Length: 385
Image (tube, rainbow, N blue to C red; front, side, top):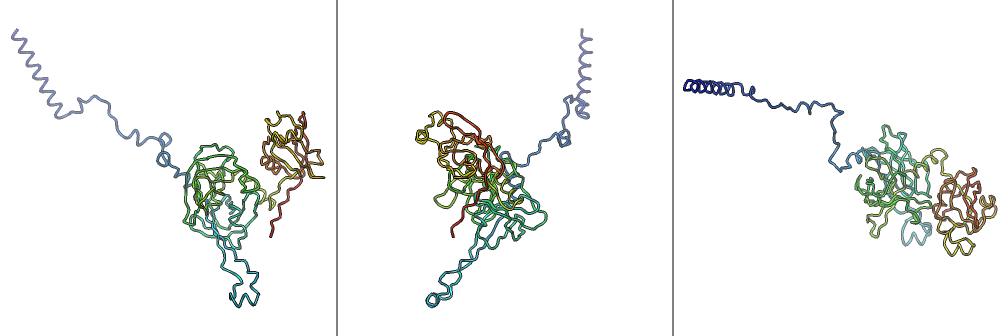
């Protein structure tokens, strides 16, 4: 027994000695765990690695993409001549004050074409004798007015410069309330500024700002000088042209309005192609349909709930009269597009091409029928001087 114990103790001693030598000289022989290195991550193909362009929730990429195409606009207008400037007594008491100091204006614009077309507001350039455009890269150029559309408060300018940055036109019809947006412009002349917010409402009208209103409302800060600037989405695509704000102080109160890019594109195409915007006109006097008018024209109460616009007057020999539209008719659709208010009817008719017949869906007493009306050309109202 003692012999076996001696043999066992010697074997254990040799084994421990060998283990000690290996652990001291070759420790890696004893490590059986799998080996991981950074090579599998660092050398991974670019397509398999998600690369972040900025912090989570940052709109820096959208701002960088869109800002290059947003310009500042400086305008100057010669002061009006004093009507009493030639009166000798006026000159005696007040001196030669025939003209005052030139008036300056400030606004923004968006480059929408490599050939130099710029979208802005009509009120930014209206009456200006000189227009200077300043790019975000500090280049400057004199701008020429290609055309204006006071009914939507839009204007098209053109500059002659090479290698112009161009903004991407988005789809404003796809916007939804709550979508994040950025407003870019030159408020108060402090320099290009980016503010953020969301789409607060869509289809705002009856504000008394323009003849044709279909505004995007946003709480992104818009201030004087932002007019004509860009309202963009999180990808930097143009969604609207910043136009107006509701304010009691002159500054932003979180209620701003932008003209949808869908409207701006139509105005742009018409002005570039024809030199002006041509709209349809049918010669009717519409009013909002209510219970009182329905009773006056013997219209059933159910029609009021269905919606539409009642015609209370028709211009003699006008397009509507020639087609058979009568007072008391309720127009529920224009060229297949439903209308539920006077503003919607006005906009839908304006979209019609003069000289080309279009169907108007009319409710007359108890029956509904389609009447083909050939619209005329809407004339711009004369501005009193």
